[in-house]
Every structure is written in C-alpha cells, then in structure tokens.
Image 1 (cartoon, rainbow, N blue to C red):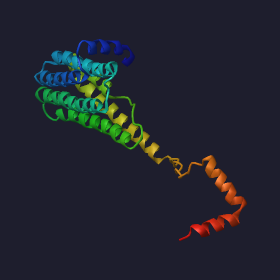
Image 2: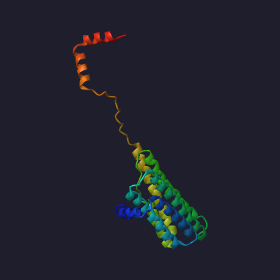
Image 3: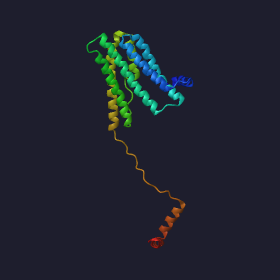
Image 4: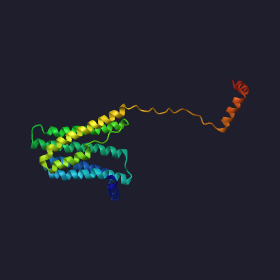
Length: 225
C-alpha cells in the first residue's frame, strides 16, 4: 500500500499539502467520529472513520514523497494515533452506556487498555534495541473491525469481544518475542584498541633500535636531564 500511495503522496505534496496537516486532519476526524458514534450516528461515524484512516495512510506517503520524513514527524504521528484510538473507543463506550447500559462500556475501555499495551510494548522494545511488531490485531485491523461494528450495529458488541481477545493475544505474542530476544546471549562488541599509525620513518627508527640497542641506550643517556 505504501508503494501504491507514493505517487498520490507526491501529488499532494506538489499541491502544497503537508504531512503534519494531514496528521492533524486525521486527529480532527477521529474526534468527530467519537462524537458521532457517541450520539448514536454509527453510519456517519463509519464514514468519518474511513476518512481518518485515509489521512493516516496519506500523511506517511506525503512525508516520504516529499523527502520530509523525520523523527519529529514520526513522534507526532505516533502520539496522534494513540489519542485517536482513545477518542474513538471512548465514543464507543459513550454509545454503549446509552444503548446497552450497565457495565458494557467497560468492554470498550478494556479494548482501549490492551491496545495501548500493544503500542507501549513496541515503543519500549525499540528503545531497548529489540523488535516487537506483528500480531493478529494491530491498529489497522482494529479500525477495520470497528468499521464492521459501525456498519452493522447488531454485531458491535461481538466485534468488541473479538477485538479484546485478539488484541490480548497480540500483546502476549509481543511480550514473548521481546522476552526471548532479551534472554538470548548477546555477542560482545570487540574492544577498540589504540593503535599508532606507523610511518616508514618510524619503522626505520624501530629497526635501527632493534639492530643497535647500545646506540639507543647512549642516545637515551644523552637526552636524559
């Protein structure tokens, strides 16, 4: 998908659109999705969710197409993704509180908690020099599953249960993967030893000292204070 979207990103960049602008637009659409879903307008929330997902794909394409990809942009994108997840699942919890009542909103909050754990495991592992990616339910899969729940209101609660189960499996998978990487013996790096560059003149002096040690001793005696 990134290869296919690269020409689109380049075209948007030539038209004056910046990656940070798309990232902010995606955050605004996520907030609108939360409000629409919380108010009970699930179909409207579905279209807004699709728009938020599209901007999430395009901001990276614009950054790569324009050659402006940076650590600052990656950090900004990652933080806004977490805020967007919290907003959307918070809107789902708000909707469940009015539709089902009882303790059903806790289900959406449980999905949110495990989703944050998955993201934290990857960030922490990468900061320690390990890899923690993959799994059955990453962010893209969670957004697709929520879209199905928004399109068919009857299956929203079962979809949340499936999301909770698969996201938990993903969190366990990443934990085990990093645990194995951290437990494996790490090959120590060879120590860097100080080495003096040997020039032809220095080699000649060393050879002379080796052949005539008495002259070297006399030279040292002369130069001694």
